[in-house]
Every structure is written in C-alpha cells, then in structure tokens.
Image (cartoon, rainbow, N blue to C red; front, side, top):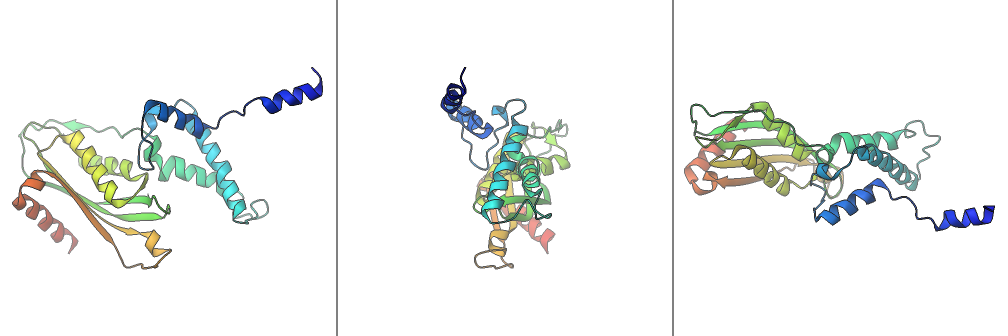
Length: 241
C-alpha cells in the first residue's frame, strides 16, 4: 500500500472512543442516570477505571496549561495532573466508581424498638457547583423495627462516606443517606441531620467563613410522631452544646 493511501485510510478511520464516552453511551443505552452524585459501578467494565483515570490526567494537564501554568518546567505542578486524577477517581469521588461497602447485619434478637442516635460522624465531600470542599458532621436517628436487622456503629460511617464521596449538594446528600439507610435497615423511622461548612462560600463569592448550613430529612415515625422528633432533636442539642 502506497504511503498516501495509508495516510488517507488513517485519516478516515474513526478515532477510538475515550473511556468516558464509552461508559456514558452504555449508561444512556441502559436508561441509567449518571448525575454527579450517582454511583455507576454496575456499568463499568474491567480495566475501565484505570483508563478513566488516565483520561482524567490528560484533561487535567490541559486545564493547567489553559491556566498558563508551565507544567513542563514548574517542578511543583509537573505531576499535578496525575495526582489530581488519582485523587478524584480513587479518593474524593470514589463513591461514584466503587461498590457499596459490605455491611454486617445482626439479628434484632431482643426486638429493640427504641430510639438509636448515631453521631456526630465526620463527613467530607465536594460541592457539585464548584468542586470546593464540604466539611461537616451528620447525625442519624433510627427507630428500629422489632423484626429488622441491626448494623454495627462503624457501618453507618462507611455507608455515609460512600454517599458523600461524590460531588454533592447538601440537600440531596441527606436525602440519599436517608434512603440508603432505610433500604438497609427497614426501620420504623429514620432521621438524618447534617451541618456543614461550604468552601464555595469560604474561598470565593462572599468569602464568609463563619456560615454553616444545616439540613434534615425525617422519614416514617420521625415524620409522623412529633414527640419522637423532639426527643431526637433534643439529644442532638445536648451533643452539640
């Protein structure tokens, strides 16, 4: 084959799709939502996470160059793109790409149906709007069903971290946590209260480093029983004073 023909065929041959495009097309074909705070692990194929990390590193490098940073000569940023890719894919946003943590359940032998309060548990995430840190605390109230299973204290922290290790907005995060715990515990009631600092306000915009946001979700008995709700919120106040 002559060199001109070989070059023509190379030009006409479609470029190999990037892993992000392949994954997105697969999700669309399955009718699956893939918003920033969704988990997509069930639609990843073996080796694709490594490919995705490599793609993110290349695009992070382009971002730095577009900010007119000399990544070739600046020893501080020469490897920043790779570090960013690893941080986002493997750590900060790992809740998008990893399966839910395994949770050991225990039978409710004594048929406990009294209020359980867990917290404060530390939470860390990033705002979906600016990818700035969200740092705060969360409390969980559980009214077990007499025949439902129980989970260990550390499992609350692991499940909540899995949800928060995605780009989030706080109002949706508390709802996702409540839904996940409802599915796992099948309780008579679940309550989630989150208080957090948002660095999209601290670092930029109004630059107010004293403001915090508190949001809550009440389900089941916590929504229907004002006395139970007051008891839960009263215990929270005692723990924060």
